[in-house]
Image 1 (cartoon, rainbow, N blue to C red):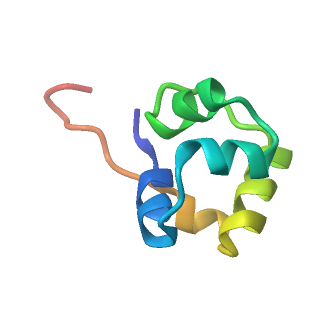
Image 2 (tube, helix red, strand yellow; image 1 turned 90 degrees about the vertical axis):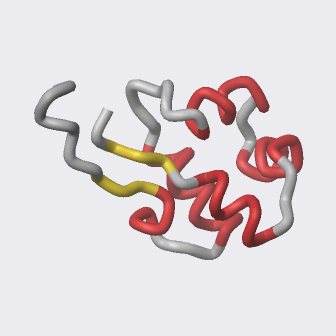
Length: 73
């Protein structure tokens, strides 16, 4: 998928655990893991806003686009 979620990067920068982030955002650790590992098909704007509020960042700090490999895509 060409959209990459950089939650791991933000967690490392903030020295925060997945469990703590899930609690602060208000989602389950399992759902956060799906989003963090790039397996999510969608993200609610409310969840994205909550992530940005916790991390004090912009959506672009969490999401980025990468071109798919021409041979694989």
